[in-house]
Image 1: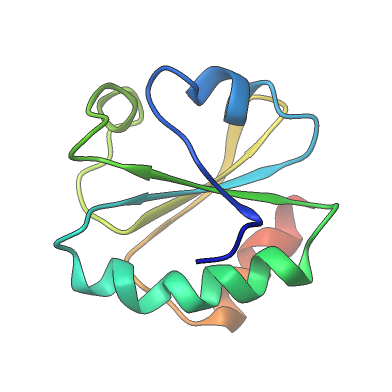
Image 2: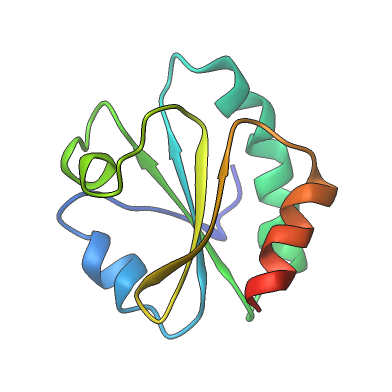
Length: 108
């Protein structure tokens, strides 16, 4: 996993995501989720590609149940792009790098 990716928690969510001065792509994931694992290398690539313009964070929904509940996460992986503390874009399910790049570029 890339050192450019932040692992956040319910406790650190506000500081890591909502109060971030750059947009944040948040990945709601779990250890047992196959599709979550399949997009991990894509997120590593995007972290490098958008370094300085976008932060990528991951939150484990098994260890942190409050944040997914607050954002009505029903399936994983769910990816949300936050800008200025608000959800600007959401993608449910594993998608390719091209689709994620489009999602990010719309917000940036």
